[in-house]
Amino acid sequence: MIGDTAIGWGDADDSISISAIKAALDAGINFFDTADVYGLGHSETLLGKIIGTKKDVLIATKGGNVARAEKFTVDYSKAHLINACEASLRRLKRETIDYYQLHTVRLQHLQNGECIQAMNQLQKQGKIRYWGISLNTFEPLPEANWCIQENLGNGFQLVLNLLNQFALPILNVAAEKGFGIIARMPLQFGLLTGKFDSSATFSKTDHRKNRLTKEVIGTCADVLQPVWQLCQKYQCSKTQLALSYIKSYAAVATIIPGIRTPEHVTLNTQGLFQLDDADKTIIESLGQKEFLPAMDLIRKQG
Image (tube, rainbow, N blue to C red):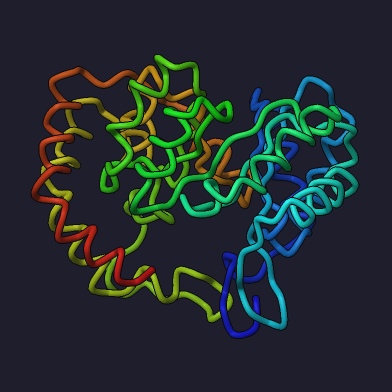
């Protein structure tokens, strides 16, 4: 919690989280994404404890989102980012962060230049290997296009899933220019797993309490019916279809569905496949029209 605002997924048990990380390693997962604001540093601390010394595992983290005076705010100043990166390194028990990201930075911050100076300095000092931007959930294009035009950074973390396709125009041009792509929120906070209906409830410490309302769940269930028919064709679960849809874009380097339990590791890694191009086209066509009212509703919830 930051003040009265939930930034997590409800109560968590460190022992279960550690078991999930170990299960991920056993399953062959070698890329973990986090941020200094997740758990207010606790997520980085747990990862540092389990995989900090593992040289064959990549860690990406982020800076720029902060909690101050019990309120959520942002700070992309050079001084803050350098200090934040060094604090992340200590928590992660690493000498170098593989991939450091400006957390949902906006165009005015990039054009200000301080955050770019910070990233360049950190990279020159060997504290980060590569850097990029975690793009805005609903308006990813301005910052991505600016970085591509200015040839700044090495990659983008963007939201891409069956419902939220706002970042699709970035994929090919970014890949052609050598930017790596991390796809986040592939399951839209669990909405695309099919496990929630309009009776679902969330605790006050779970950010989904205000995001996955009955109206959101019901509306999305209605518009997604044509997509879920593909589960029969591919003989797969909704989770497998949602993840496989993203996996079918060659420009996507990795997908970060998130895990809380060892069971999530199994659900998120098994039975993935390549969608037929015709089916991708159908989903994209729905995203350009039929899904837009649902996305407007999701945007209003934040």
